[in-house]
Image (cartoon, rainbow, N blue to C red):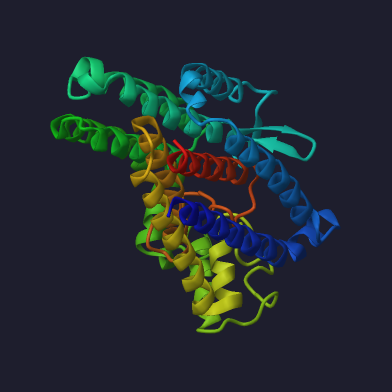
Length: 364
């Protein structure tokens, strides 16, 4: 049974990656040819990231995942250090007002991706070590929340509210499943409302995103342009799509067509059947992930797999929701499909760890 789960998860991941390879070239070739005089510019870089991600995933499959528990604190310390380092002018690379990347030539690295993985590993380890104190506020609830708060603050400074919200939801779900008191979580939620209000409605570009989400036609050539063009792409595809490679919205109408809004291009070129196929693949991925969680051989494996599956699930839901106009624009990539070096590599690392946990459950 566990062997079938591993095979199914691996197969679904490969299918999603293959869709990504095809759609990245389709959605970026004209833009790349215009800007970089090379239609394969993003395609070639994506293959490099894919190769590195595959190597890291294979490494995660080869080592015993329980060794991650031993390095959870050092890994978290490295993640904190890199999050601080990327904020230093001249070291971190600023793109469109956000300072989130280390970049050398065509190689880029986003330390927040490592931080997400480090936090998930740390919290899973913490839950195992402090199992008897998980309902105690000072010993069981406060430490992971302080770690989450520190990481969230550094990611917010970049700024990246979408990633902050995602990792917060994952960690809160993990400690909730572990058995922390609901009153603690409710108090945290109530205390965070003023901060969320300030972060969203007191920051001009985020406030415009919310207004555009509520009614993009109030500013169709400004803040609402991206949402409108995304919905035009999805609507133009109909049931069967306009044909692979024949998207009109990728012709400089839809910004970030090969990254955040690649789902919209899939909808335009492959139609409703294409988008439903992607959603079904993610549903099967999550279903197999849940089976791995249930069959995890120990508590660390249980909570580690829970955190990883939640993270991939949230990213997929948020990205698809944004493309369809169901959620405000967040800037999160579609796992395994969108162009993006760090996100793709760490998604593949997560799959490697999940396959490792499943294999260990089969051969304890």
